[in-house]
Image (cartoon, rainbow, N blue to C red):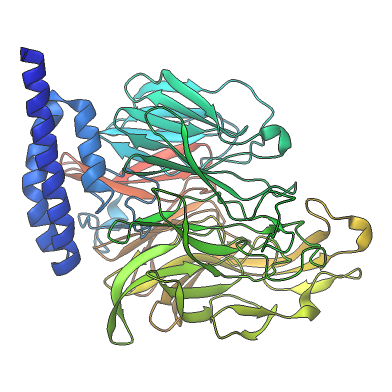
Length: 557
């Protein structure tokens, strides 16, 4: 065996050892809580730091192995920070007592006309932030640009972008014309480029991919045309398709249970339970969107939460948040995974605040509903059925003369990621109370939107929902219309978000009191936090810039 082969063997064995301790640490975390879990992670983390100096690519994989299960302090390795979708950090350096001292560490201007809607990804001290057709690699300490990649000009739909994904030495970017591009994490050079779906048919992609072991899960958008809901698993090394899940079958499929509906796109990043080996994804609205009569029945699996086996793409179960939707209320919102007590018994739960205005708690092992409750203004349902689903009121279907509906088309919430605070048991959601008028007449046809809607009034509000009861513990007004910002909570008792008036906010998690704010332009992404060199940073986008905030160092003026 050559010297190189011997070194590679040692690296492989060491990496296997780190993975083993990462799994043990995660199991300890599940049984005994964060403190014990972090102690168990210590050995793996120490070896990882040593390993980083000698094997950067392998270290990246190690960070993902540890950090995706339980978000590491020095990284934000995936869209939600970890697999749970809780967007909750264990960091405590920034507290309710000192948050008013936050000072700007750095700002990075993208120079783009579109605002930042992406969640920054942080691995090995490098931040990856995206906008349509673009990705930048930045030094997390200074925002110094390491490289930039710009995708070729295209005719795709440039509506926004959610973020990147990292695996080994790869960084992945989806594009407006529904391609997936794999880049070298060190240089930004293209390794491969594959088509996710045909943009000429009306597909596009804003999705931040989800890495589950050797599967790269990526979805698409497209409700202007009658297209099947499509989620692909792609080999992260080669770009080859492993499987495709259709939430609705392609048009013309025999014995379709969707009632003739297409749509149900999976355009938001899902979550993952490694114990159950299930990925949870929310699906979009059916098409044609407002013309309900041409697609009778409940139209599964549109406006649903689906649980999939990531190895095969097979459906384990589905729960429909909006049966037979005729208002464009995707259930693509984040399915947040929580292990806690419910009605006195330990449960593996899934929480979702859905665009239709209802909050759901499900048993994520089987999809059984545990709780359904409204969290915003709603008038479209006449009750809750035995499965925990709202029952659509036929009188609230779109009509020729128009009908007043709450919420409006943009929904009671939307892509804005919520955060779950385990200490308080609160799911904190960027919500909206809103009303709109919906129209439909046969002349509108049977394709795409097939109707019209108009917004009348809306007010953004941050709401803290008690997951055990569905009751609103507190509300914090955010301004006219919905805020574009997601939510981050920390173990010190802070909630970070943005309002509708261009302010970044820090609130006290227990009661929603404002503790800090800064005018940075409209916030369109979800904040993240990390700690490097003993300093905690909070990152948030304002307009087309990314801002990093931290506490002043000792001796600063």
